Image 1 (tube, rainbow, N blue to C red):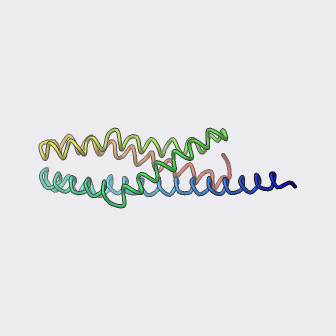
Image 2 (image 1 turned 90 degrees about the horizontal axis):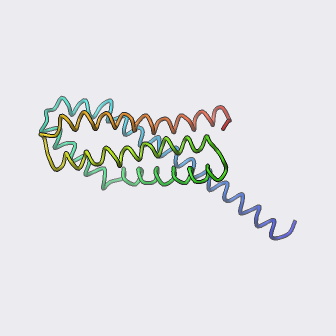
Length: 165
């Protein structure tokens, strides 16, 4: 085997390992953000709803500020970037299973950026008077994004356990 073929084989092997790592990171990222969203759906938002509009608003605004400056934003960004990487490679390899996984994860990201973040900004600006509408809309969008992120993990699990595409 010539040097060129050997180098190409090694490069191909390294790329396969890199793509596997990106896929694992995308699935772990989707699991982490999906877990956070689920925790909000089943624990945080119901507790805030019971605490009164002003207390709920104050707490949620503080949570939102922390989320944008703390470790969560790193996890969120990494999950989105790696899901995008999986989407690109799935299109190159015509892998519909990976495309579905990436699509579900990226749908979660799109809902966050398109619905939840703008609602967070509005709550910060309008205060407790907006809380009842905010709670209703934000919780609905949060539930959908949680389902999307968890769906990505479910697709990966099905593919791993079933060994299929």
